[in-house]
Length: 416
Image: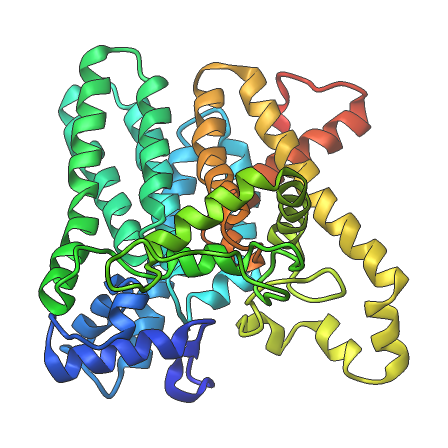
C-alpha cells in the first residue's frame, strides 16, 4: 500500500465509482449525478461514508478495510472448516487464500470484487457454523449474519441478489426442520431485501425512477449479436430493439427483453456465444486466451509471464503462440477439472460434506450462468474465486491420493 500512488489501485470501473463518490460529496446521499443511476450506487455510497472519516486518506482507508475484511473472512471460513473432518485441509486452503496474488492484491483495488469475495467466505462460513451448532439460541444470529452479508454484497453489486437467493434456497433445502427452513427464507430474504430497496428509494428521489441501475440491458447487449464474440469488446451490429415507452426511447428494460428474445430466436448463435463466454469466464489473466477486464489486476505489475513476454519478440511469440495457447487451454480445463473433482468428492461423501460442497459451488455456478447471459469476462469469477480455490485444493488432494494409492480413500482426511 505504501508503495502505491494514492495508497490504492483503480479497478476496472474505478473512475466510475470515484466519479459517483464526487457526486455524493457535492450533493449528498440523493445526488442526481448520472453515473449513480447507470452504475449501482451501493459501492460509491460505502466509499462516500469513508470520506466522512478522512477524504485525504481515502486510498488508505479503502485498501486497509478491504484487506482486513478479506483476511478476517479467510480466517473465519477456515476456522469453521477446522471444526469438521476437513480440518486437515485448513492449512493448505488458508495458504492458498493468503498467497494467491490476484485475491490478495485485489483488496487494494477500488472495486466491488474483493469485498464480495469476502462476503461469500463469511456467508459459507456462517452456514457451516449454523450446521455445526448444537444450541438453537445461535440460529437466529447466524441467519441474521448471512442476511447481512447477502445484503452487503447485493448493495455493492445487485446481481448478487440472485446468487444470495439461490444460496438461501440451497441452505434451506439442506436443513431438516420446516421451522428452520421457514426461518432461513424469512430472515435472509427479509434482511437482503433492504439493499435493493434502499437503492431503489435513493434513485426514486434522485432521478424519479424506481430502478436499481440502468446498465443490465446494455451489458447483455454487448455480449449478444450475430458477429460478436460474447466478450467485452463488442463487434458487428447490435441486437435490434424497438422502444416500448411513449417517449420513443429504448429503456434498459426494453433492451433486456430484446436480448433475451434474440437468444430464443437464434439458438445456434446462443450456443456459439455460450461456448465463447465459458472460455472467457475461466480464462487466465494474460496470454492468447485471456479475455476480460482484468488489465488493472495489481498482480500483472509483477507477473513474471508479463515481464518475460515484454522482453523481446521471441518470448512474446512463445507466450502468445501455439505453446501459449496449449498452456492456456491446459490451465482453463485443468482448473475446471480440479474444481469439479473437489465438488464431486464432497458431494459423494454425503452429509455435511455434501452440504459444504453445494454451498461452495452454488455462487460459482450462478456467477457463471449470469456471465452466459451477459458477457464473458474473467473478472466476473473473482468474487467467487476463494470458493473455487477451496474446491480446487480438495480436487488436487483427491487426485494426488488417487495417483499415489490407486483409490479414492474415504479415510484419507487423517493424512491429508
